[in-house]
Length: 105
Image 1 (cartoon, helix red, strand yellow):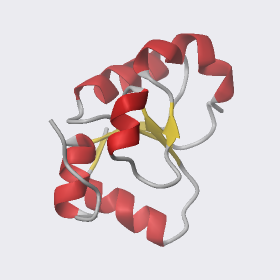
Image 2 (image 1 turned 90 degrees about the horizontal axis):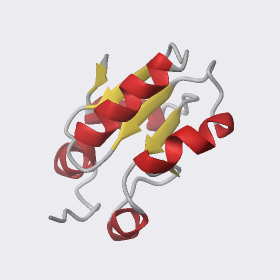
Image 3 (image 1 turned 30 degrees about the vertical axis):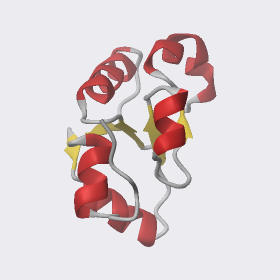
Image 4 (image 1 turned 60 degrees about the horizontal axis):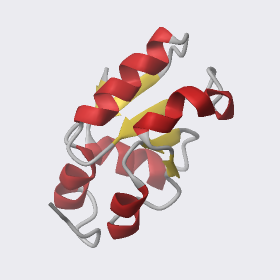
């Protein structure tokens, strides 16, 4: 399942409870991030899995959506049932939902 960036913004504005899991690297997160997102680089997810609750709604995100799709698939394989991937990543979010968030290459 995919979630559009504007849907993430609407969920945040409505105060809905969900985990926005940012799977990029620390340097990317420092350049641009969505407030209240949780940084957990893709390579760290297996060893940090216990930090996540399988009952929570989790939306994975990265720069353009590829790494987060991998994270989504991994979490589903581990028994997480309510996981979606933010289409287009933070780049799409900065274009469509929050233009104040800087874009980078």
